[in-house]
Amino acid sequence: MIDLRSDTLTQPSRAMREAALDAPVGDDMYGEDSTVAQLEQRTAELLGHEAGLFVVSGTLSNLLGVFTLVGSGEEVLCDEQAHIVRAESGSHAGLHGVTTRTWHSAGTGIADAATIEPLIAARGGLLTGTAAIEIENTHNFGGGTIQPYQNLLDIHDLAKRYDLGLHLDGARLWNAHVVTGIPLSDYGKLFDSVSVCYSKGLGAPVGSVLVSNRAAIAKARIRRRALGGAWRQAGVLAAMALYALDHNIPRLADDHAGAAEIARQINEVAPQVIAAPPQTNIVVMSTLPRTAAEVVAAAKARGVALSAVGANTVRAVANLNVSYDECVTAGRVLSELFA
Ligand SMILES: *Cc1c(COP(=O)(O)O)cnc(C)c1O
Image (cartoon, rainbow, N blue to C red; front, top):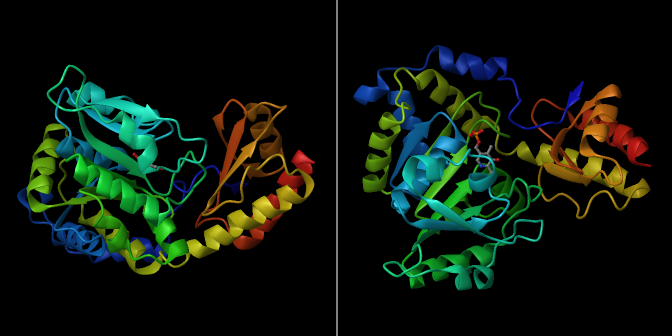
């Protein structure tokens, strides 16, 4: 099976597992796991921030990042396809009293300041006050799209003008960085808090890091414990994330090439299937007039695993465990299926 359902499915390599064997570990709740501390510090520096917090998932990292910026009874603005509204089980509202209000994102998830500005509600008025804006880069349900840097600069200015917090869900920020060549810190410094995942394209088994200033990370650390997310010798996981950091960023370009090849082949026979060529590792396909479930089943029967992400939408995600040649094969299988 050529498994293109997600880039979270990657198996840690032998070398990555070996990196965990000799890593010094300690009780992280006592602040004694030097490997965790190293991962937190290196991630913070890469993103141009003071401090970091290693957590079990991107969902927890986003939950804590938004928590540091938005109080109970306030709102965060984001697009209607954002992971924080579609894929985090209502946790921001349920656990922290944070409501979301969304803007229409025209499919790609590309954000711009002119769309966001009219939504901002003053704090202390009759309406729920806006405390922060949240941006996703790359945009998962938008099809791995990259937020144009100028848009991010404009949104940064907007947030400053209205004294709003700005959180980046950078689960796949690595992919944007590899395509644009823009340093991670140039992305990071525009935001008050940034969440990055080691468990997606970088291929580590578990973990995300939230970065921000020291005070916000200290607050997030205490909240993490309240949520049951403090851990002990997590250095075995941090060691694998450090391995991913050292070895697996440049190779994301291979995933991008694989995704482009899949899209190219499909586009030759069925140009209506893919709205725009993939910018990174995610290929979003329209299955109309068939349902997503029918296409997932048909592809699976031919040895290609896709995931359904809407009634008539499926997704293929190129990843570390699928070679370029397998992407060529998947492209052929899918183009036959869509022809
Ligand atoms: C995967 C992902 C997350 C976090 O996911 P977890 O499964 O909780 O690690 C957050 N945001 C985006 C855009 C993602 O793709």
